[in-house]
Image 1 (cartoon, one colour):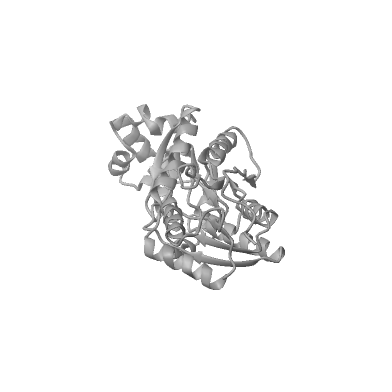
Image 2: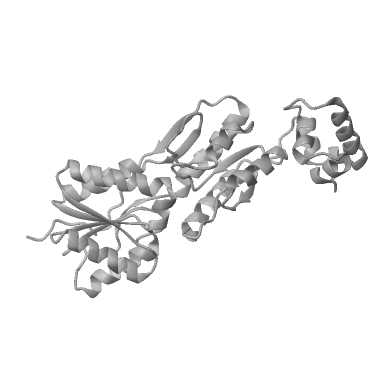
Length: 336
């Protein structure tokens, strides 16, 4: 089966030139257009993806850009990937997964080759290198995440700011006046991943607005750094009675084990909340109150927004999914 690469080689032009000649999106020299058309005819390329795009039909494929970084927590990352795939399949769409760090280059190659009808974006950073290129695309784009500059973009995400405020609200309502937060690894924050920063900043601001003593520590997935995070919080907050964990499952497992080893019982001595977690907390000992992060809540709307853009204009906007709180008995009033 002939590909766009075969057409480009036969015509002696670039792949992007073939795409422009077939789609008519840009003006090219007539002689070049003739060479491309002759190559298309000779190779029978119209019978495949290029022909469908030439006729104005859809490919029924979405590109999903979900870069894998060294610090990426694979279980949560793949839960969102799978959710996008499931949402797409409900509309008879397939998904082309792009996982390279240089997401902008991969996306440009895929879109200019007319292989996809739209783009879904995961793992959004505050200053995401893909944003300028995404704004220039002629296909629908939906971000699962909120970059710092949302101008011209369609975004959907959990309302991490409200989730942070809800965490503080439950602890404060139970009578806690000194609360700590264990977050993700330092590399995640330094890379500018949008949701950890949004939660952290809103949590600290909400706690201070309520007059609570508050501190924040980061933790990698090894037990030594988790122990360091727990020690750092207890040093900064000698009277800490509430702990919120916005971190990977392994970090939360280690933190609970550290508290148990030190004879700190949950919730008798320390109230603990698992915030914005994409995993169940029912298996913890004890089970933790949680604000769940459910991939379907954002990925299904993201695919729906991409399809709406295919059918007509959708104004750039940000949709935030409100948080839900699940009580499992890990928060109580602090001991006198």
